[in-house]
Amino acid sequence: MNVRLLQRVRDAIADRPDRYCAAHWAFARNRRAVIEFGARPDHFRCCIAGHVLLEEKGGDYDEKGLLCEGGFHDPGHLWQRAAEAAGLTEAQRNELFFPSQWDAPFKKGYYLSSGAEEAEISAAYIDHFLDKHAPERTWAADRPAVPGGEEERREAEGDVAARVA
Image (cartoon, rainbow, N blue to C red; front, side, top):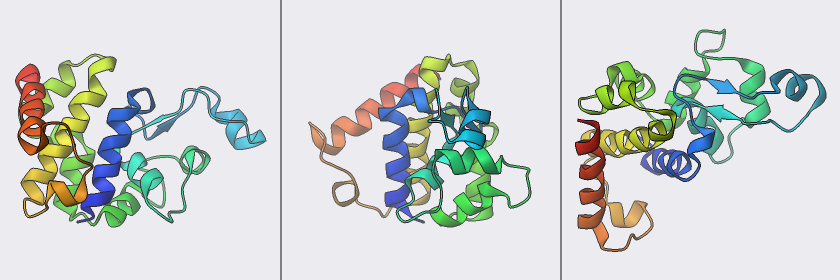
């Protein structure tokens, strides 16, 4: 599993919640202008799989590329490319990329969330997912230091989990 890539995805979602929407593979208000005329995307958003492809170092995708290729059920299955980039098994891919497969209380929290809360819950789920599937990772080596260290980070995650419960 590419833990560092998934942590970059988590950070991108947490840092820029306005660019995240689990329900959209890739969205921009001016999608047609981006594709046909090379305009800069207006209010671009994408899901976790889209963020994986955007955050992959040396990857082939940018916002326009995601908008051009379409989504989950189009030929090429970009969600599968995202899973491969992140080093996910099929079961892990389905769990992480589809909120309907998330563990409680995150699943319920996601479906009851407002747009403003969606990114926070999703970022917390990525942390939960990594704790569950990559427990051997060391936060100190893979993440920037946070005030208060590991204990404070886990408390903050617990606060999010408690709010979504």
